[in-house]
Image (tube, rainbow, N blue to C red):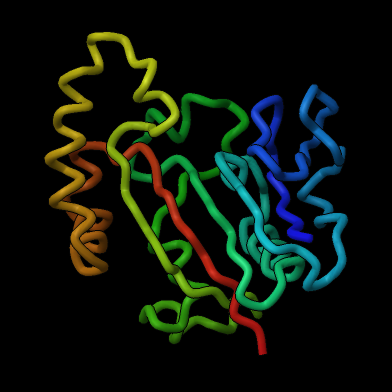
Length: 194
């Protein structure tokens, strides 16, 4: 049996997943505060969705460490978060503690410079299997009002420029992305364990 958990699911739980959130709303199966750790055994989960939840937590390193702890070896975490380049998207929600980037997750992947050089920050190890920078939040594109159309069209251009590969993503996050406002980072991480 596959056991996948949707962290911070609210009322929009992913189909087939067990929903976990800090509040008991329809769709939530497990009520728990992720900042106090995940209520699952080590190496017990086949996957985790963490869509727009990690930016709400005080201790990012501990949260990623908990995700790693409960995932089975080779299991995946699918993550979406507001990108730190977009101050509006990151800070308009008063419950956000931070914006995130591909570079922040590179600290957990030793195939990136920061992951190799600073692996002592956390025992959690992942491979970034997929990484994407979105210039418009993916869950809002389908329902965007007409004034967002120019931004959605530019998203197509920026997407080609930014997401060709690691070096392009790095250059985008570091240099020109802040000028155009990357709104979201989307990643697939695979848990690496002994």
